[in-house]
Amino acid sequence: MPYTEDDLETYRIWFDGPGHATVLVGPCSGSPWLGEKIPLDGRHYRCAGKIILKNGRELFANLPLRTHTFDFLEREDVHCRLGDLWYGMDEPSLYEQLGMRPEQALPYTWQPDIPLDYHVPGPYPMHWGSAATERD
Image 1 (cartoon, rainbow, N blue to C red):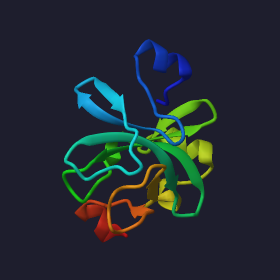
Image 2 (cartoon, helix red, strand yellow):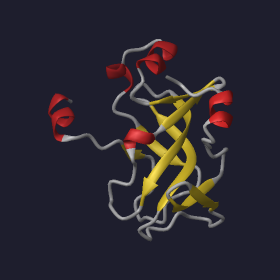
Image 3 (spheres, rainbow, N blue to C red):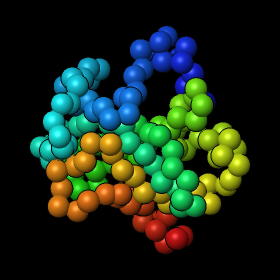
């Protein structure tokens, strides 16, 4: 189910706005990240950015990143905003709202608003597990 604005308030869920990032400093807390780039320092970040679907459509997203591995994106917790609702990328209702099937949208690429301090510029690929890779 997508999150509504009321859900965000009720369950104390936050998503970063455009151009913002948060470094996670505890299990339920974070501090604004004010750097020009997101460092590869082993910490977890949550940042605003975009998802670029396979068909080229771009969606505003919040991207959870882990910087202790080069598979930076924590795909299971990516959320995109459509209108006033936040959808997880694995929610069938997201694709219903987009008017497409998941296979028309996936795999996607992603780009944080604040760049990674990494020698390869984004957008970055959505890395698939072995079963999905074989399918594609």
